[in-house]
Length: 137
Image 1 (cartoon, rainbow, N blue to C red):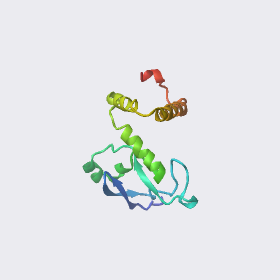
Image 2 (image 1 turned 30 degrees about the vertical axis):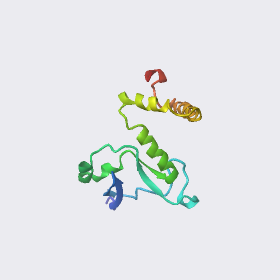
Image 3 (image 1 turned 90 degrees about the horizontal axis):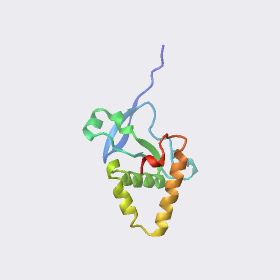
Image 4 (image 1 turned 120 degrees about the horizontal axis):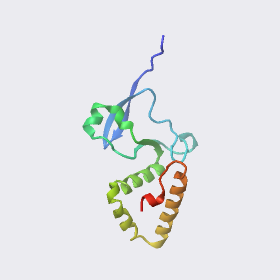
């Protein structure tokens, strides 16, 4: 006889509303997906971070498992980075030039950090994506 998996509901915040999501295991294990540190190693807590709120709230209320899409478990420091990336990339791809225009206004030291970030980002993706930088320019 197959063993039944017990489903428990866990609170997950989605667009500032707490949604009770039925899951077979807790959504957090206390290890940051970003920096890999754990609660046992000194971080205080981890949180579920939504990189993208893909669904409208009424649909998530109807189908709570959707609240777990596009998420990662992050510590506070990594969560701040995730929030910044979400804000930075919220534009539609055809409006991404606005991000570039604003970035051009930054002081030179910040531009150099952004250059380094872009270089590391492309390097980290080189074997995972079949697109080239020239596809974006």
